[in-house]
Image 1 (spheres, one colour):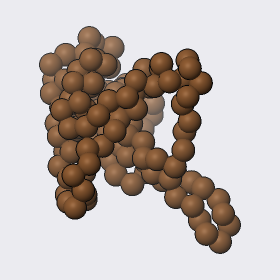
Image 2 (cartoon, rainbow, N blue to C red; image 1 turned 120 degrees about the horizontal axis):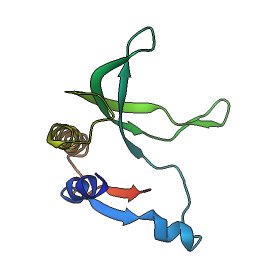
Image 3 (tube, rainbow, N blue to C red; image 1 turned 180 degrees about the vertical axis):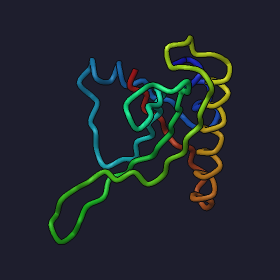
Length: 127
């Protein structure tokens, strides 16, 4: 799955492998944006598993509150896709298609929000 995600993200931005950076002591988490991809099970209100897999792509950013000087990381954008079938099943073409759909949606929104910028986003992969 990681190779698929890398391929999709590389089609719109620059990938940076943070594993090597961490090993060399060069990685710092600063006031940047973070894009998270989560694939997992769906539970009903009683905690029972439903025969669905949820794929979520979300963007968090760093915000400093001026009055208190506190920093927080609010989620500023999020999108979901659902695929029929339990989470335990081998990730299949439907999940891959959902990931591609979500990344396409992200890139369209990113392009719209950054019309004036020709700079592609950088993706720091932590796996």
